[in-house]
Image (cartoon, rainbow, N blue to C red):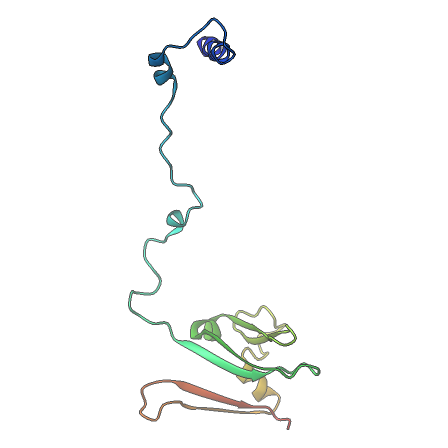
Length: 154
Protein backbone atom coordinates (compact mmCIF):
# COMPACT_ATOMS: atom_id res chain seq x y z
CA UNK A 1 0.00 0.00 0.00
CA UNK A 2 2.82 2.33 0.88
CA UNK A 3 4.47 1.76 -2.53
CA UNK A 4 1.24 2.78 -4.29
CA UNK A 5 1.03 5.96 -2.21
CA UNK A 6 4.66 6.75 -3.05
CA UNK A 7 3.91 6.30 -6.74
CA UNK A 8 0.87 8.57 -6.51
CA UNK A 9 2.91 11.20 -4.72
CA UNK A 10 5.66 11.01 -7.34
CA UNK A 11 3.15 11.27 -10.21
CA UNK A 12 1.42 14.22 -8.59
CA UNK A 13 4.74 15.98 -8.08
CA UNK A 14 5.64 15.51 -11.72
CA UNK A 15 2.28 16.91 -12.83
CA UNK A 16 2.73 19.90 -10.59
CA UNK A 17 0.23 18.75 -7.99
CA UNK A 18 0.06 19.66 -4.34
CA UNK A 19 2.32 16.88 -3.19
CA UNK A 20 6.02 17.62 -3.20
CA UNK A 21 8.71 15.04 -2.47
CA UNK A 22 11.42 16.36 -0.17
CA UNK A 23 14.98 15.90 -1.44
CA UNK A 24 15.87 13.55 1.41
CA UNK A 25 12.91 11.31 0.55
CA UNK A 26 13.90 11.27 -3.11
CA UNK A 27 17.41 10.12 -2.28
CA UNK A 28 16.05 7.26 -0.20
CA UNK A 29 13.60 6.18 -2.91
CA UNK A 30 16.32 5.68 -5.54
CA UNK A 31 17.85 2.27 -5.25
CA UNK A 32 21.45 1.44 -5.98
CA UNK A 33 21.87 -0.82 -8.99
CA UNK A 34 22.00 -4.50 -8.18
CA UNK A 35 25.48 -6.01 -8.35
CA UNK A 36 26.19 -7.80 -11.61
CA UNK A 37 25.92 -11.55 -11.33
CA UNK A 38 27.76 -14.04 -13.52
CA UNK A 39 25.36 -15.26 -16.13
CA UNK A 40 25.25 -19.06 -16.59
CA UNK A 41 26.22 -18.83 -20.29
CA UNK A 42 29.08 -16.39 -19.80
CA UNK A 43 32.44 -17.59 -21.14
CA UNK A 44 33.96 -17.62 -17.66
CA UNK A 45 31.18 -19.93 -16.44
CA UNK A 46 31.98 -22.49 -19.15
CA UNK A 47 35.69 -22.84 -18.37
CA UNK A 48 36.84 -26.30 -17.46
CA UNK A 49 38.74 -27.01 -14.29
CA UNK A 50 41.82 -28.37 -16.07
CA UNK A 51 42.71 -27.93 -19.73
CA UNK A 52 42.89 -31.06 -21.87
CA UNK A 53 46.28 -30.02 -23.27
CA UNK A 54 48.99 -28.96 -20.83
CA UNK A 55 50.23 -25.41 -21.32
CA UNK A 56 53.10 -25.27 -23.78
CA UNK A 57 52.31 -28.62 -25.43
CA UNK A 58 51.55 -28.37 -29.13
CA UNK A 59 48.90 -30.65 -30.61
CA UNK A 60 50.16 -32.43 -33.77
CA UNK A 61 48.43 -31.21 -36.93
CA UNK A 62 48.13 -32.69 -40.40
CA UNK A 63 47.85 -30.94 -43.72
CA UNK A 64 46.13 -32.40 -46.76
CA UNK A 65 46.41 -31.14 -50.33
CA UNK A 66 44.09 -32.80 -52.81
CA UNK A 67 42.26 -32.32 -56.07
CA UNK A 68 38.46 -32.45 -55.91
CA UNK A 69 37.02 -35.50 -57.66
CA UNK A 70 33.71 -33.89 -58.68
CA UNK A 71 33.65 -34.12 -62.52
CA UNK A 72 33.03 -30.43 -63.23
CA UNK A 73 35.26 -29.06 -60.44
CA UNK A 74 38.83 -30.47 -60.18
CA UNK A 75 39.86 -27.69 -57.75
CA UNK A 76 43.13 -28.27 -55.89
CA UNK A 77 43.04 -27.14 -52.25
CA UNK A 78 44.89 -27.54 -48.95
CA UNK A 79 43.25 -28.22 -45.58
CA UNK A 80 44.65 -28.52 -42.06
CA UNK A 81 43.24 -30.57 -39.16
CA UNK A 82 44.42 -32.19 -35.94
CA UNK A 83 46.13 -35.56 -36.02
CA UNK A 84 43.81 -36.71 -33.24
CA UNK A 85 40.72 -36.08 -35.36
CA UNK A 86 42.29 -38.05 -38.23
CA UNK A 87 43.28 -41.04 -36.08
CA UNK A 88 40.38 -41.09 -33.57
CA UNK A 89 37.54 -38.99 -34.98
CA UNK A 90 35.99 -37.70 -38.18
CA UNK A 91 37.50 -35.35 -40.77
CA UNK A 92 35.35 -33.78 -43.47
CA UNK A 93 36.79 -31.06 -45.71
CA UNK A 94 34.89 -28.73 -48.01
CA UNK A 95 36.07 -28.00 -51.54
CA UNK A 96 36.33 -24.22 -52.05
CA UNK A 97 35.40 -24.62 -55.73
CA UNK A 98 32.15 -26.60 -55.70
CA UNK A 99 31.43 -26.58 -51.93
CA UNK A 100 31.21 -30.39 -51.92
CA UNK A 101 32.22 -32.09 -48.70
CA UNK A 102 34.77 -34.90 -48.86
CA UNK A 103 35.14 -37.55 -46.16
CA UNK A 104 38.80 -37.90 -45.22
CA UNK A 105 38.52 -40.03 -42.08
CA UNK A 106 35.65 -41.75 -40.25
CA UNK A 107 36.98 -43.57 -37.20
CA UNK A 108 33.63 -43.36 -35.40
CA UNK A 109 31.73 -45.28 -38.08
CA UNK A 110 29.18 -42.54 -38.76
CA UNK A 111 29.38 -42.88 -42.55
CA UNK A 112 30.05 -46.62 -42.92
CA UNK A 113 27.59 -49.48 -42.88
CA UNK A 114 30.00 -52.13 -41.57
CA UNK A 115 33.17 -52.30 -39.49
CA UNK A 116 35.12 -53.80 -42.41
CA UNK A 117 34.77 -50.70 -44.60
CA UNK A 118 37.79 -48.40 -44.96
CA UNK A 119 37.93 -45.62 -42.36
CA UNK A 120 40.54 -43.18 -43.72
CA UNK A 121 41.40 -41.83 -47.14
CA UNK A 122 44.54 -44.01 -47.07
CA UNK A 123 42.48 -47.17 -46.57
CA UNK A 124 39.96 -46.10 -49.21
CA UNK A 125 42.71 -45.61 -51.82
CA UNK A 126 44.35 -48.95 -50.90
CA UNK A 127 40.97 -50.71 -51.21
CA UNK A 128 40.52 -49.26 -54.72
CA UNK A 129 43.98 -50.44 -55.80
CA UNK A 130 45.83 -47.16 -55.34
CA UNK A 131 49.32 -46.66 -53.93
CA UNK A 132 50.05 -45.20 -50.49
CA UNK A 133 53.58 -44.38 -49.35
CA UNK A 134 54.58 -43.21 -45.87
CA UNK A 135 57.84 -41.33 -45.36
CA UNK A 136 59.51 -38.52 -43.44
CA UNK A 137 59.26 -34.92 -44.57
CA UNK A 138 62.49 -33.66 -42.96
CA UNK A 139 65.85 -35.24 -43.80
CA UNK A 140 67.24 -34.56 -40.30
CA UNK A 141 64.56 -36.78 -38.73
CA UNK A 142 63.10 -33.97 -36.60
CA UNK A 143 59.54 -35.02 -37.36
CA UNK A 144 56.98 -34.50 -40.05
CA UNK A 145 55.41 -37.68 -41.36
CA UNK A 146 54.48 -37.55 -45.04
CA UNK A 147 51.86 -39.76 -46.61
CA UNK A 148 51.80 -39.80 -50.38
CA UNK A 149 48.63 -41.13 -51.96
CA UNK A 150 48.22 -41.90 -55.64
CA UNK A 151 44.98 -43.22 -57.01
CA UNK A 152 44.96 -46.27 -59.26
CA UNK A 153 43.53 -44.19 -62.13
CA UNK A 154 45.67 -41.96 -64.37
